[in-house]
Length: 463
Image (tube, rainbow, N blue to C red; front, side):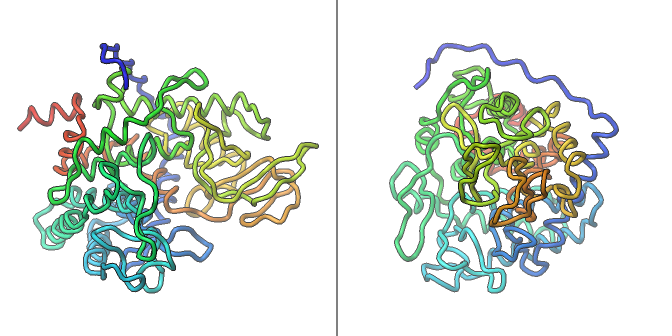
């Protein structure tokens, strides 16, 4: 696919020194965002709502982010270690013991995978949602993080490690390869496998690393190569990188795995690593917003960031004499591949990219809070999204319109809160990254994918 000639490695970005007011802001942001998972999560089963305050089902991906949040809460002294141990143990016990099987109702999953959404009351499949391979992967990442973090020789922590091992080993990745070597998006009892497979740059690198690391049902490197073969290299607003429009695709794997300084063959051919690729994607979106080709209100150096998020309504409205099309929940983004932009900005786009480009993400988040106050920043940190262009009375599907200011979501979303908290902590202390370096399944998955260099090579030299 690419030339095999040696390309000089890109210089790492300069280290960023936090100013006192920035550190204070991150303190507040992390604590409030942590509370989303701690206060709203089910104490007995560990289920985390997809959103709040709108009544909702549980998201298994949000459970994975919750499992990642609890050790951060311990290290930040928001909660005691014993409290986190109890919550994690209850969560893993439920994930392991809840019924799995091919029945269309009354189960939590099948073949080790979990349904995308679970009913908040019954804890089983919500309506007719699919068994999701990627959402299961996000859940498993949180499970394995807890396995490595809770490392004491105490009965409860030993049980956590054993449960995490059982949950991970049960996943039958080969079953999900209905069109090998690729992995399917998912399955449902009514129709079987979905007609889509994971290929090209997106949020699923974490899925492939987990599948490669499996000690029971591993995929082969051919699966990873088939996925990465469709990654598209291009240039956007001066940044050469592998493109994927929504920023969540450049963030999710990095929540758990430190990809700085290690390379697979895909990025090595271009002299960068995946961390640098995500930095460039972030910078490209920043420059896109400053240029503001669609002339949305407010876009600029302190208002930018397109990713999957809530939106105000599905309709066309006349704004400033021009017809504008708005959307509710959508995968917004901007890249050389395509653009989906209705003026709706999600704070998680900048928040999930804090380690990649702190010099632009942290000032952006601080300005968002300062400029829009309680409309945007509340008891659990940032609400999901806002749109300055929709500042007139409209029958919005969700959220609220503040006249002459804009539309503001009133919900927080678990899968968008999670990256903000974890990536802020990774930037400050490297907690999740350092912990996951000790997980043998993650290490095996990276090596099976062909990653070399940096901490991964040093880890081998230490043995």
